[in-house]
Image 1 (cartoon, rainbow, N blue to C red):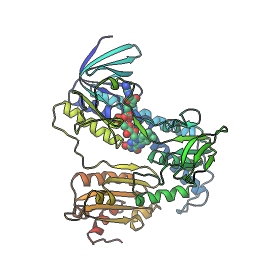
Image 2 (cartoon, rainbow, N blue to C red):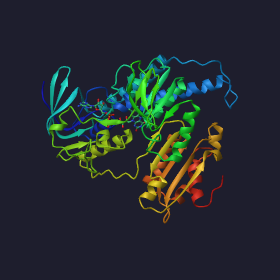
Image 3 (cartoon, rainbow, N blue to C red):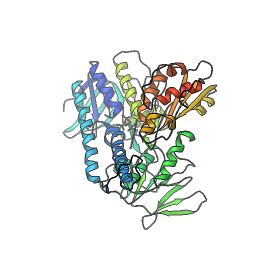
Image 4 (cartoon, rainbow, N blue to C red):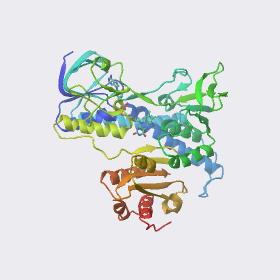
Amino acid sequence: MKDISCKLLVIGAGPGGYVCAIRAGQLGIDTVIVEEKRPGGTCLNVGCIPSKAVIHAADEFHIATKMAAGQSPLGITASAPAIDLKKTIAWKDGIVGRLTSGVSGLLKKAKVKTVEGRAKFRDGETVEVETETGMQSIRAEHIVIATGSLPVELPNLPFGDKVLSSTEALALTKLPEKIAVIGAGYIGLELGTAFAKLGAHVTIVETLDRILPLYDAELVRPVAKRLGELGIDILLSAKAKGMSGTGALLVEVADGSEQKIEADAILVTVGRKPATEGFGREELVLDMDGKFIRIDPQCRTSMRGIFAIGDVTGEPMLAHRAMAQGEMVAEIVAGHNRSFDKVAIAAVCFTDPEIVSVGLSPDQAKAAGREIRSAQFPFTANGRAMSMADETGFVRVVARADNHLMLGIQAVGHGVSELSAAFGLALEMGARLEDIAGTIHAHPTQGEALQEAALRVLGRELHC
Ligand code: FAD
């Protein structure tokens, strides 16, 4: 097979890698991307998109179930709803298929060459790819490592049989009656909530003494309440120890005693680890930052010509961070003067209700030595929330006390993920409380709660 020589080689076609390659191609850079599975990476194939599709299906089914039980506040009734999970999963797979072939099309359009197979470094400038038709050698001036992340396995509960990672959980075509979820981070809670809404009995086991430890208690409270309403059992300060002979999950609970939890499926969502092994990374002299690859603000590693982006480079392990890094690296390779200087990266939990956090929470701002002004505006006073029959939650703003510069915006509530764009824009543009308060927000929308929260800090709230 003829060796390939190119200016830019990207390893991994997840959101980080494919965006980098597309942008590089658009900029006229001779680019090759190598992917061992399917374009789109974790996010499109087994992460962001499929999970949100399953969550949406579960929400719809849950609403129909409530209607059938005569619990719809809107006065809608329905007869016993049913769900054909095989069809749901086929629908979800259809969306994944459309998106991943869309990525392939965009790569082609940008004149990026795709090589299918697993890449392995031979040295700092050459990569070998085991393709179906033999070994392909690729030499590049610049190489971007965008190999992503993998689910963390528990040694006492290895994946297989009924112990599932999020990947297998998103492909279930038959709903297990009883599901134990280990880990109350966002992936565990999103999927646990969806399975409960589909009709499974869900138990969540978490070693810490709280759920969603990355978010403050005020934001998490409405989520915890809804989990209770859905009949989800939560065991905090509890450690999964393994499986009993009969297949029950053994859990050491807070008082040190052992509980047996009967489960048809055990979903392990205890985090994700960067994919840094098995492709020759170990043989390169790349500095590490713990388990992640160390990068500078331009995503350069400690080796000349080698960049790293996405989950392999650290927290927050989120698709939109990977994409932003990928776009930036392509421009740097094209000679543009770029650096990763974002004010904030929004984090969203697609739980029920949803949580959005951009920038600093009040506690984080205080811990950073800031004097702040902060206020919340509740959705109970927001007409749009009322008209959607879900008034849970609030929008909260955090600003500097002296000049009112926005430091953070958070929200919890139905559908608030869509507010993340406005929150992110406000922070990135350096908005002040007065800018948000002085912007006309369309009525009736949940976004009005952002304006009202800003007005409230200024002592001028109108609707509360
Ligand atoms: P990845 O998407 O992991 O892609 C890496 C690619 O590299 C893979 O396709 C892999 O096959 C390939 N690869 C690895 N090694 C090699 C090699 N040696 N040769 C060739 N190819 C290789 N993030 C969000 O922002 N929002 C969400 O709502 C969200 N929900 C999620 C839900 C779930 C269930 C999961 C699991 C994740 C979720 N994430 C979410 C996280 C998100 O998926 C990741 O942050 C994102 O995919 C990281 O992108 P990446 O490009 O760094 O890596």
